[in-house]
Length: 194
Image 1: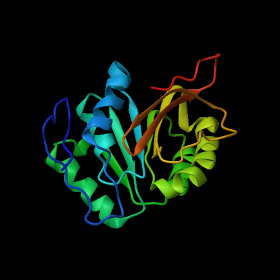
Image 2: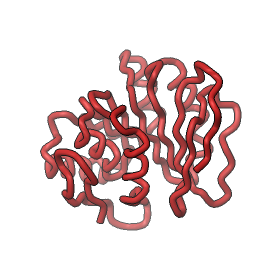
Image 3: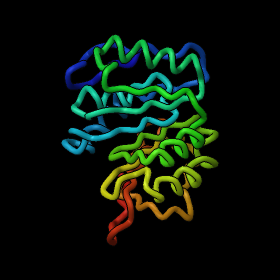
Image 4: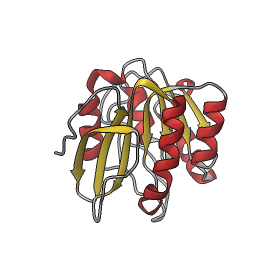
């Protein structure tokens, strides 16, 4: 069972969805992601896309993020996120949108919302198809100028997405997961693989 790794809700176990439809991020991968982000989480506006149980957004809130929007098209997932926010006493900082990911991203962009930190952890089979469309919305302003996108994809058969204007500045493998960190390409940066 996943738990909150650090911060105000440290150690609290999080409910997950039953069945094999979702694949929670391992605590090891989650801890590594947040170690890489460090203090950049503080006071951020977070968007957790394909949120599942909401554990990435909740971890960010626990570590000092200002707010988080959780997006998942599954009503069951939205119910689990609501329960986890209540369990961790973080409900006031969370907003849940039970919508398809690209539709929700378009709606948020149209409303003028921007985010400092965006997590994108879709079903592995859908990642390659969704990422280019999502990246376009991020480039149009959904991701703040100095913001970071963190994606999780299958490590098996992984090939870096092509044609993105976002810059990958770090990539790490944790078992079956390949985690990539992107920002807006404002300067030449080396693509680091760990």
